[in-house]
Image (cartoon, rainbow, N blue to C red; front, side, top):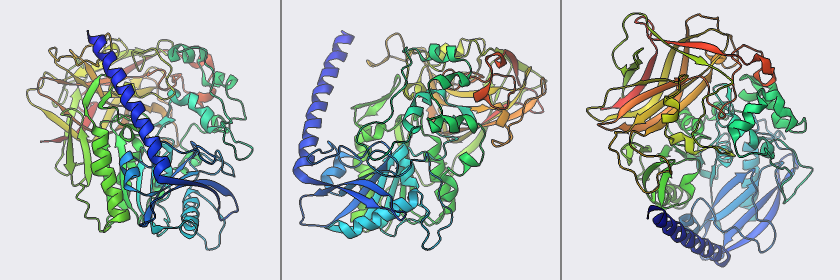
Length: 623
């Protein structure tokens, strides 16, 4: 009966989706005209730009632009997008929508550069280029060559286009009034391909997308994805062992793979690609958007918002964090769910109508005085499953609380007594999986709220949990794990997971994954990794001294989650997380990308709970 209901829901959703698709297509062709241009930049390179202009010429419209490495198509006369702008609502409200292929991608000229460095100083008459200058030159041309506009520009984008939105902020064109970086990459060493020095193996297949130049403008893909020959990612990467064996799939012609291999540390190559240091003197209004379960870009939105807030106190700057995985807010699936956790209905549509559309309407069509009636921070409590509004993020009213793991598996606010420790053996030949599922993800998403019971029951995962909570505990803000550890070898990764343990009597809903129950479900709320060699400095790796007690600080990303009465708060600590991240040999080598297979060895790790310098989890709690 349950499967029958699911089938009915599926066909109902499919039918409504096809109808909506058809209606959106008809709306675009009936209400917009499309033109394509090659816009010259200051260095002579031309960028392919597609402009959709409302047919109704009775009023003037602002521009809303997206710059993308993923194609501004469809290309050619009569070929139209099915949906324009950030949402159907904005498409119906009426804007001049602009899509542009960034240089070196698709129909644009030039050479592509991943996270192209920002030129920090503008010299008059200089032909130096970056994404800011390309945005500036494009806006200048469009203002002069497109009719019936009101002189105002907005920009938005999700993921990589989110980075291009953030990159428009330094030295912004005066006409750029409102920018919404959504799931933006802030720094490629902390988003997507790396987290705190650990290489995210789960994005390895995406290296094809970003690693090849093309000979000139093209409307067809010039790259192909690796054929792994299996749907089992664990098995595929397990047999590769060292990353140097992956060279058989990516040769020297893949420039991004070469860059990854040759720059394992946070050196100048990565540092100059970060947009974070350039977010000064920001003039446009900014609304940064992210998802609490965004496995790809969670560092970016939080760090970009906080940096703009710190460096530009007079700039209109807001944050929206919802119960979404990567980009969920741009689509409507009816029920919002990540893994087995259901958060509510039509959350994305509510955001599109009452937050996103309001932001652009105010600054591009309205008074633009900053009185939007939107809060400083709209954040979703993923435990209580409700929106919260704050006048600052993290909330000013949140206070610090420290949880201490104990050798008996307890987690509480009492400082450990004596000199105890917890020990486990980390074996690279038997790494801890990051998910109970067997699949090959282009980029993973579901694991961010997955059931962690499979990991908690392994001997190489330490588990610490509170007693059953007698009242709600709301964590709101930053999390810092101050680990005190040692290893019998000279290198190690450290993974910390914050888990919400549900009560045994929690009922299932009809969309729970087959074979899983919410009874005693271990919901992952937040998780992060640090490559231990970077514990003191991401630019200067340092081996561990065998057996020496060592401090390893690990900053997890922010959280907004209520652990309800009757639940338990759990911390898991482990050293492998496969194949989400690559395996650490645990024998210190200069460059893990070039390690030999024989370098991968077992190690015994300790987590200390002594009275003087205990392992501690620092959180922010709302009373």
